[in-house]
Image 1 (cartoon, helix red, strand yellow):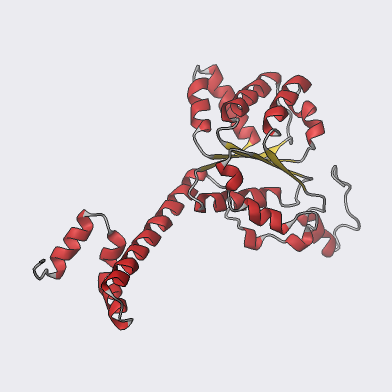
Image 2 (image 1 turned 180 degrees about the vertical axis):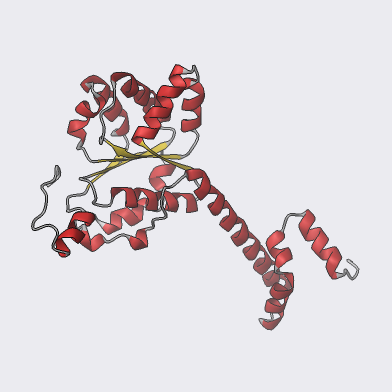
Length: 261
């Protein structure tokens, strides 16, 4: 039998066990259990539930910081009606992160301003909620870091770092062309992650134009061969949100042609 324990002793035990959510809410949780006339088993379940919720909350906050998202975006804030080429059900399926668990690639293709980055960030946040690690970077920042690491003799270290997250998001591929050396470094990264870690890439260029993006059709084909082997490709055909707002305000009279029209 456990003898009567005073409040301070119980708080000390909970601190030692790192059950900080139960510790911080102890009195209110016990009062809630008493008001609800919970059994001993139900009370333990209530305490565990609150502790797990606190730990999940802290894990998500830390993972979001590590991911380096440039903005907070979520799927609830995405205007699916404005982009009818996107299947909301497909996006909701992707939000379950099964493709991440399998190490697949996801390509979001379309002209500027149609919501590719919004979807990439929103899906990345959903992936974190599914308990996977995520890292977000732009294509130019990624390539610059690879080139720098290569010149300093730290390429292997950098590739190992970029191979760790379960999902690597590369935003804005295609806005600026790669030089041949950078293209080969990017190929090494894709090869390192192939069938091991998932990748989400947004691009304003169709895959048929990636030869010009990488400056080498052979390297582009090798990259696409790996990315498309296990992949999901979503092509967004629509108008830029920013251009649409300008037309509504009367600043533009008609839509600007896009590569994906």
